[in-house]
Length: 275
Image 1 (cartoon, one colour):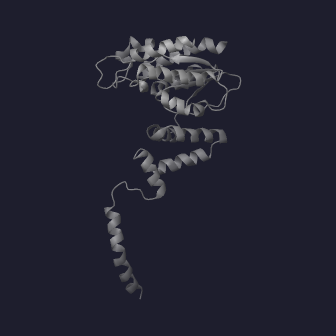
Image 2 (cartoon, one colour):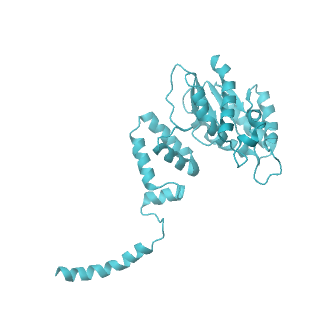
Image 3 (cartoon, rainbow, N blue to C red):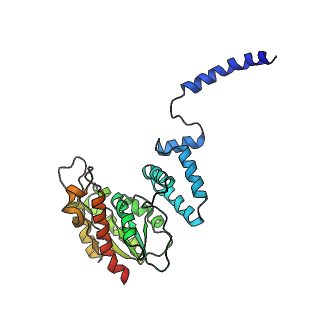
């Protein structure tokens, strides 16, 4: 009798087995995997996300809240990187910062250039300031205007160092200037001391210029002067050594360049933190 039932069941399973064997590689197997694949493609594996969630669940509430903000803000490119780095227990720009209440609070806002020097600035100012970073690769001014309330959070900031430029390179000068004015209005409302990080040398893909930053700095410089916002001149910090301090993409910086940028930021911040 058992053999007879098996003879009936096994043929019935053959089409399903065939489908499983011919299913496209990488096809999602459940709703969660489908959702992750839609949002992150192949950049984030279900098992890695599950391990990350388990890690986050064991954190204190304030750290859990920070991780939730990062998941909402980092997007399809940076969040999978963050998950990978978190699982490897690496210190990054987006590592949670637990404040020393005796120290001033500093917020760094900017794109991937800013992200790259965050850890070094934090290290150089250890014992002098609580150095935080906006929970995003901040991108263009439009993104800043949309997300600034989230980036500022509810805490009080003593100093905010900010930059929006490379991602605004296709804007007309008047539009870029107008957006900077709106960003400044949002930041001035915090009561923090503001510092503008002057845009570093970069060459856009296909550009005939060796440096596309002057056009942007020509717009931002007078805007900052009008508002009496001091500059940390990151352009000058690396301009003379671009050949050895910049990566092959003609935009980002290697370890040498990052250290120069961090030192320039810290040099500007030091006197502001003592007042």
